[in-house]
Length: 183
Image 1 (spheres, rainbow, N blue to C red):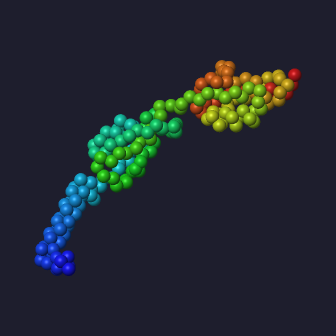
Image 2: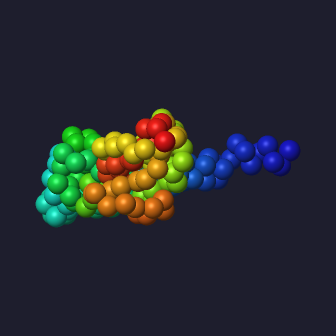
Image 3: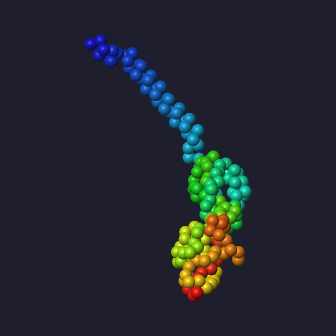
């Protein structure tokens, strides 16, 4: 009974009113602080950095108040010079906040080297698919007297005989010496 009388007393309503005012005040202060801290509704557009050199791109990002990170690039585009931005995330024109990190994918300074697979004594057709799988191309084809028709007898790169396992730049043209089927 005493408990019910307290719920209808003026002290209870006064304390309830003060707790409500304090709660609303704390929520309002928190929202105001978050709005200022997170720069709510303050956006800027990401500049277009594609086909721009890395030095120019980083200077432009720093001028705009944006951070950047250069990602390792495995795609080499021969249509662009080395160390040029191929793409970036977020994309050009995207609305971002100040101090946002922009991820840059840069054209490497050249193709990475690959190891020549062992294609000696296999057919031209299998050799072509094996070379293509590692990123190499077939260049000139020459024939030599050998009983194995279209069998790879020798591998050449830039006119010199090379052995399997040698390291050459990716997308290089590899010349093959094949058997012509004659003794």
